[in-house]
Image 1 (cartoon, one colour):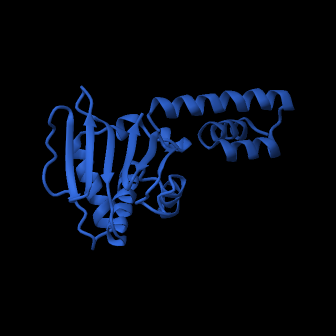
Image 2: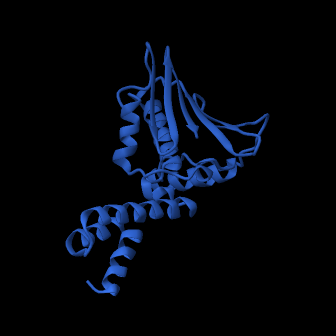
Image 3: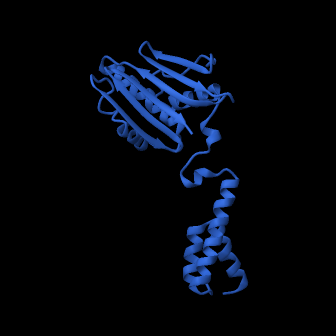
Length: 208
């Protein structure tokens, strides 16, 4: 293998590791030990470069500074998700979200309320949805708001994976319940949990 081909192989190992490893396996002039050391060094550089650039999404996660936003940025992202995913349900937050004592709130319906907790830096730490649905229509509306919240905080998830979050929380079976339960799951830096007691449900999204 010429120096140019060797340089190309190393470049692929750094910037496109899977392809680079394949080329190394097929055409490398080095022995197995040297290939292993070279591949490990290239992978370490690849990880360091992407983390330094903030490209954590390459590894399936999210950047924390994108998760924690101001109330107004959250409102804009939520509204964008609502217009795209549920344009006929009128679930957008039209009024500005004003912060009062480190909290803000929005009422989608008389028994369906969103509350956000804001940290000292002005960014959201936690979002909660309080619901007490009494019929199928109210349960449907609650599920849609929960789905939009997940889509806002984890935009990398498709419809099937958003549904998986709700299934993990047993929310697709019933929202209103006479019993009590607590369930928790995590996606991309957001810890989702639900607490239900005597027909009242509290859905929490805690941002790391």
